[in-house]
Image (cartoon, rainbow, N blue to C red):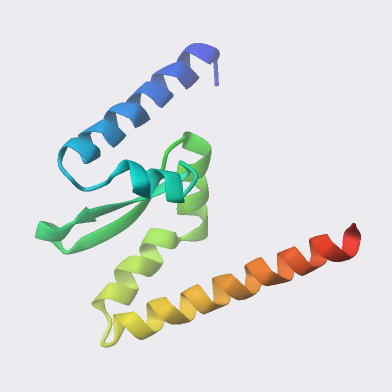
Length: 106
C-alpha cells in the first residue's frame, strides 16, 4: 500500500473507533486491554458480537482465522457459553505453549 492509502485507512479506522465510542459500544479501557489491536463491536439489536481489528493487518488476521465466523456459529448454538469457554481454554493453552518455547530458547 502506498503511504497515502495507509494514512486513509488509519483515518477510517479512527473514525470507526470514534463512532463506536460515541455510541457507547467501546471504551478506552477496552482498547487499552487489547493493546489497541482488537476490539469488540456489540450490535445488541442484531444479536451480533464481532471482533474487529484496528488496522488492516489485524482485520485481515481476524478474517483469516475465522474468528467472527466461529462467534456467529457459537452464539447460535444450544450452549454458547460452553463453546466460548472451551475456545478460551484452547487459546490459553496455545499462549502457554508459546511462552514455554520462548523460555526454552533463551
